[in-house]
Figure 1 (cartoon, rainbow over the protein chains, first blue to last red):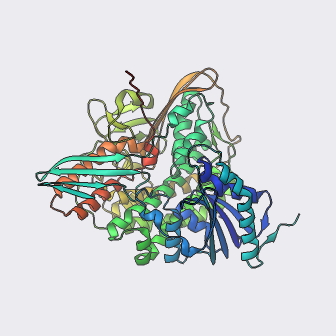
Figure 2 (cartoon, helix red, strand yellow):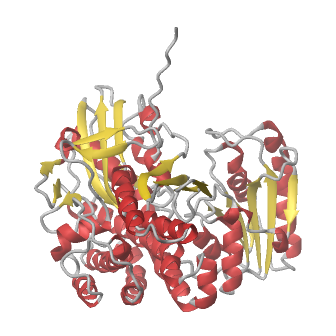
Figure 3 (cartoon, rainbow over the protein chains, first blue to last red):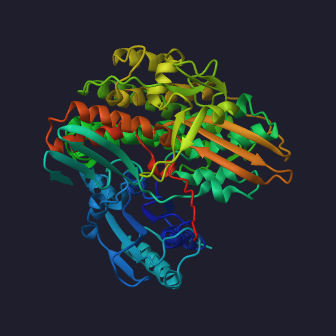
Length: 166
Length: 434
């Protein structure tokens, strides 16, 4: 129903009630406190079709998600589209209704529904249990993560966004 | 994974793809005969009923919405129905119509996701929607649009599409103005037309023959194809008030599932969901949906679970036409909710989640706190029937090689769109010390 789309989207994926899985939404909330003009803030559960819709027709989409690569909890991974591989789709525990980020990238490519530029910022999760409290390392990395995401939005968008006027 | 031992063979799928949640399947064949079939649900227990105890009566509406990201409205509606029953609150007129409208959005979203992302690939000979997008791009794009309009409906009425926040015991926090609903009309009309095409599209798939002797169970409303019913009926004579559900349906544990199974007492397994609703309430479909069902050759009843994809598509069209009707007749209620006063009581509520009947029961104390909660989701109720379907399909297709048999058995499970995340909610822990 949105009429005019902002050229940039910051998309936080995750469930704030599963500890570090809520880091994506937490970044979105932090950005909401200090808005960036031309930039839409979106929170999602990671379901494929909602992701496709969230980044459709954008010049730049920055997706923030908790990830698990074996690195130390709180480690920040700044990834490009080529590094998003369909591991979740082939993961024997893969749940289907969400499909996940990798499936959204693949489906977006098949349907020409990817943004001009897609950046994925992952943060290594340390705790994914029930609860809203993030683990220490992830909570400590949050300010750096927010700075990184804001920097990408302001620099990579090639001048289409800017600090919001007072 | 297949193991062979002598004349026997055992097929295991460690993780079912394209179902919602974490489950597995186990089939055992010995001396050329099928000896065991299990739908294993190993998704961890989620304890929702446990942690609702001690919460205020206003809270289950939002807490139970978190059980599922695909059908949160169903949980909100059944929770409202049960708590309003306990508190003697009646929500009717335009407030009820708005709830119905919100539910239409969820049926559209959930069914369209299953049709296009999970089920259609089975009939088109592709492994996933990604492969399907390469070969049937127009169909996938149409599906995304049909789903997106359902999303817009959820956002407008529910405040947001995922875990809507605008529903409360007694009604809503805020009700839309006429001018907020007007722009939806054209979008819903567009969605309706696309949904009609989807019915015709899926009706053309090739379906294996299977005719299952289900006992169909659904809620019942005198005038509506059921979303929010007042009774529970079956095609074998069950006709009970909502509060009688626990005395007719028994939940029980099996070793291989973290989700409870369910059976009608002294009778056995039954099926809830689109096939049941269609069988019991076909005459109440909206005109366009009824006509599309006729074109699709569904007839008065459909007992072939593979054709459930067609019934889902008919229900999507019905939801669009129902939503248009509600918007056409909308008059903004004077207040967004009716008064609610806490009191002690027990309440029961059933509504029709996309996957079928969803029952909630709450006991509320005189402080307005929940002292007991029971939630019986549709997938838990369908587990026995899914295993029954699997048994009969495998038994008749033992000649297939293992890979074909595994694939077809997975389709048999997907026919019922199981939401394993929803159904997994219970663990009875006993500690023996000696």
